[in-house]
Image (tube, rainbow, N blue to C red; front, side, top):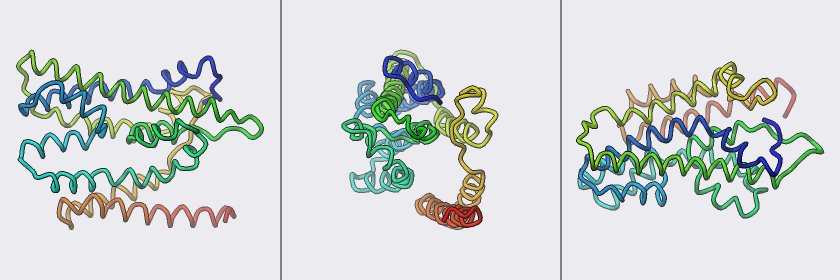
Length: 254
């Protein structure tokens, strides 16, 4: 992606966020349908999507509400589910530190999909930094992503309130979006089609996905459901870090 120029920063962010637009409006709609199907008023969808803004967390919250979970139980489950934000949030500290006042919203709005977009941005070329432009670009991309999510959730909640709908299987929409984002990161050909030959982003090393998949499968079969996610994350981060460090040593980078 080329360095955004001030007059076209918003348009560049809008174009760059189209993959999330397609996904967030869909799974946001699914969330709104599930929320209303569980017996809650439609207006709770935009409130949760604005204040809470956690895709998987919001899906889980609906189930916790319906199951009558206590506040402490809900808080613990949400902490476990959203602990992954700590892992990839730390990797964005360097970029957000230079974002000025935008950094506060960027920290709040860093969802999985927003991280996938912002982390794929190439670093600025030496002598051609435009931190102001890059900061606005990241801010607009994050803001647009949340607007997509809020719009989808409102549409789904209103549709569910007005039209009888069987919400069975709708929750799989969130998993489908994660799969699409993974394919976008793993296969460079997909990224070239989206970004064009002069707008290639960074590619996540393939060993990260292999290690994560193996850790998730092992944790699923060995550990209880509530501990599996955190254990899989911890193992994948540890093993991936060791592999990356050994590769850097081979390249003489450290």
